Length: 285
Image (cartoon, rainbow, N blue to C red; front, side, top):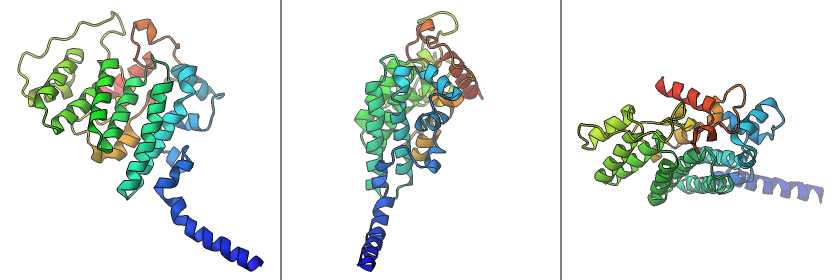
């Protein structure tokens, strides 16, 4: 009898191995394996080990705000699913993992505070996943939302222009480039796209800054530290999108900035000052 049971367990184990290894079954461990977690932003390493009491955890908690930080593990789950999609060989498994990522990113957008400074980046990342799923209309709407939330967020302009050009909508793409240059008049990427799309001198008149002082007219997005800022942001670069788009915590300051730093300069969707300055330095380099 024992031999029969042992043989049965062995048979079932062998039969289950391919299923357990299938990317389509990986949602049972959304937090990721140690190898997967090592490829995520540092903020996810802290969040997924539930390390809020550490000095690093407290810094992130202050930077994100308690009402937003409590939901951030879902963002990290989404990043894990995108890693698995990039590693899957079958398109069905790739799309399944992407659909799981859509649910996780969408949850954060729904659950986080309306003034969460990471909303533009979340819209951009979610839009990129929709593109990979062949859902261009949803992607375009999300890119547009990212621009609406933060008109100084260059990666969203580049993504939207790239998608419009791929659909042959040159005139609309030019309009987006013009709007981008109004808010980012020094952007070399947007200038190149503007002229490539048929734009002429003089360049669009810069928009008047909504605020004065240090926060006025800033390119407020930490995500673009390592984002692909060329016009060729395409679905074929999923691994880069899953692994290279950084959140602000990746360049976080050694001490948490005041929780009100964004509001003090009338910028609802800007990251904390110190984080943004590090992003700007990296972008210039």
